Length: 289
Image 1: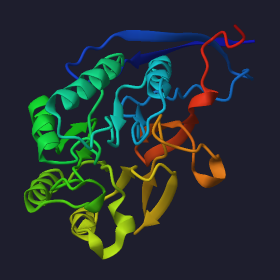
Image 2: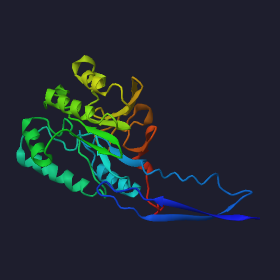
Image 3: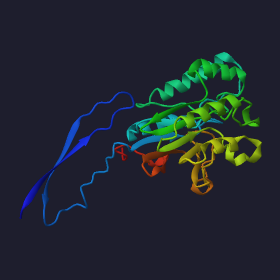
C-alpha cells in the first residue's frame, strides 16, 4: 500500500493585543486507498473565535453562583467575556456602600483569566450618584471595539438613569453609535450588547432609532434585565434576552426560560453560532470526587 506523508501548517490566532505566530504541525500517514477519518480540513479558521456572555448577577443575587461561573468560564477558556449589565445591587446613594459593592464585584471578575468587558445595567447606575461613581471607575457608559473585523457595540440602556422607570438612549449616545456604524461599514458582523431589551417595550423607547442605524447590515443583539431567557427574530436578525448568572430567579426550568447559564458564542463567517451552557452542567475533569 502506497503511503504519503501530509504536513499541515497551523498558524495560531493572534492575541487581542499584538500578533505573534507560532507554527504547529499535524503529521499523519495518508493512504491513497482508505483512511480512518472523514477529512483533514481542520476546523481552525483564524478568523473564527469564541467568547462567553454572562447574564444578570443581581436583583436579589444568590451567593456564590457568579463566582462559580467565573471558575467554569476559566475552564472553558474563551478569548474574552462579555456581560449584559446588572453587576452590583445598587439602588442606593451611599457613596461608601457603592464603592464597597464595586470593590467586591471587581474582585470577583478579577478572577477571569481573560478580558472582561463591562456593560451597564439599571442596578449599576440607578441614579446620578451611581452614574458619577461608574464614570469614575470605568470612564464611560457606552463604547465599542472591533475584533477580527467584528464590531462590538456596548450600549447604555439607562440613558439617563431612572432605575426601572426608564429605558432609553440619549441623543449623544445615538450620535456616537451613528458615527461608529458609518465608520465601520465593512465589518463582517455587528454584535450589540445592552441591558434592557428595549425592542420589547414598543414605542416607549427610541430603540427604533437604533434599528434604523443598524438597518442594512448583519447584526445580533444581546440583552437581559427580565431574568428569563427569550429569543426573537426581527427583520431577519436574532435578538437574545439572557436569563441569569446568579441573579434573582426561581429557576423553574427551560420551558420558563428560568435558569442560570453562560452563553457561548462562536463567531464564524456565517455569523455567530450561539449555545447556552447550564451552570449546573459544567464540571471539571474529575466530577466524581
